[in-house]
Length: 139
Image 1 (cartoon, rainbow, N blue to C red):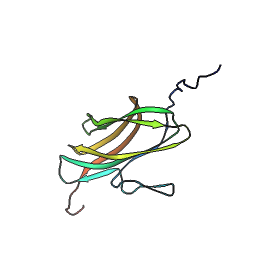
Image 2: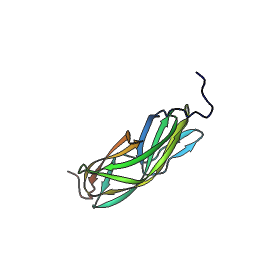
Image 3: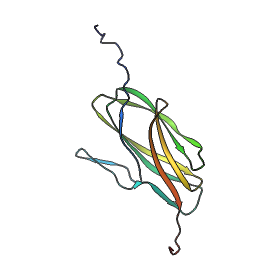
Image 4: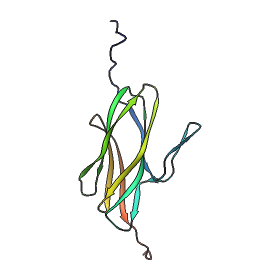
């Protein structure tokens, strides 16, 4: 069956390669991705607070445009949307680096998740924890 040049190709969901939170913007040098300050624990002396972090996500493959929505699941289990949603284009066979600065509101100590959804389907989950920072002597 012949296909029209104007026929729209079906969307193909990309494969997730990595997803991390960083303190410093990622740099690409000669085709190598350099990440500094990858975060899995935030040490905070007082709450509530806000934290600016870089979300770095790498995908491979995929075809078409997907709407990316991001949310934070806080320590209480509540979901907080991180506006606005973004449209991310993918091209088959091409890697895709997606990163940007996000501001996270932190109200309580505990376990958090940074969640990403492509067209409302789960795409990635980055766990991190928020723990109290104290300057006193350790036991």
